[in-house]
Image (cartoon, rainbow, N blue to C red; front, side, top):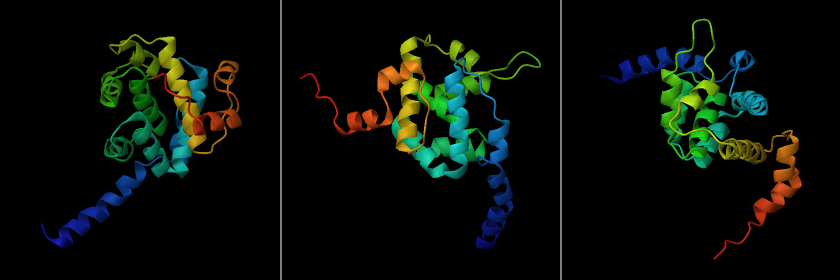
Length: 182
């Protein structure tokens, strides 16, 4: 293949690649149903964050959910996944000690009843690990930590406020980790 052919192919792919990015229109149309209203609201906010800061979003998921940046970038840019769905798939998998690909494949295989939207709540129930309160807690804590990393405001419910404290308390705890029980 000549250099000219490669350049022509790249130019032809630009509009397709741009349309796969997280946009305000995609975020406004995003509806998520995990079964947890607080998590749903945060995933919608994560979509909006990823519109402006896609690299920071990808770095966060790669670093803290332990997923290849290339894999999640392909989900976003090539397959047109919503940022909130990527975040949920990878951090839920992390919480249940599975690979992100397991969640992604389960989401991709899910076929809702006719006329019904695809829901994460149904996908989570179909995964081989029965969801527990500890899994949801781990996910919620990860969401708070991501917002703190991004220096993004987040409103905690009463339970999270008791568990994690306010932002200043979370920052102090992060800078002074508890000694290990050796």
